[in-house]
Image (tube, rainbow, N blue to C red; front, side):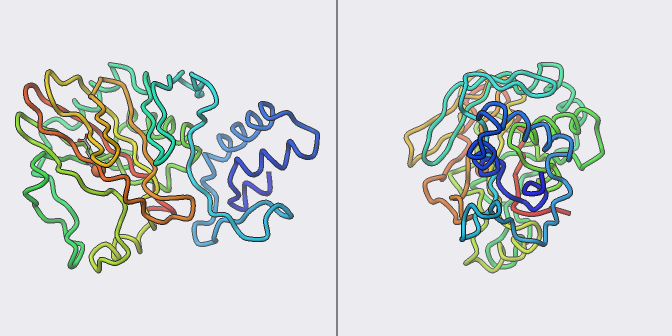
Length: 280
Ligand SMILES: O=C(O)CCC(=O)C(=O)O
Ligand SMILES: [Fe+2]
């Protein structure tokens, strides 16, 4: 497992294991998943060291990317079996079912109680958090170590995405009442914007997004992707995943997305962003 410790992509390590003839692909994947879990989903990887490809496999280093195994209809995680509901290949957008139990959704919402404040975005000029007319929801954060249920879900998402929880942002809840929305935007940080560069300096690029739907919504509130002609409706316990960049960490303009206005009811989601490096 030295290659994993050096930050190689589990997928590449699996290819090497199969090519030596000692493992079938299923056995290689299972062994790697186990090793990643034991290592706390590669927590120990030195974030300052650039990820490298397995020795003697590629001359050109391939950066590590989080990934979800889409080879079967269900994914058995250590504490839960998740369903694949749809997969869009490019850009990669995956809808997953049964990621959270109803009780877990309720517990997260209860934990945040009334701590919401008006949502903000990062200003392009200096990166400061500013209120924006395109994001009318309210937000709340759950810091690492604050709630057992959040820690458990953090570990589950790490196993699902083969990515260390240390390289993710804390959960950000978004609550939308009637007419509230988040107009189409990108989750990746723009290297050409001075304000975003300050955020890039802490944890690198936002490689992938999980949107956890914590409740059903009576009407409206879908997550929309205008360039893809796609709208995903919130369903309690489901999670939407998308990759914000290509495999070389370059922002993908096709990932434009937003939260459509809620027509009736309330929508509550939790965002989890996977960063390139340790996010402290
Ligand atoms: O509300 C949604 O469905 C998407 C939210 C979103 O894209 C965000 O908070 O960055
Ligand atoms: Fe977003």
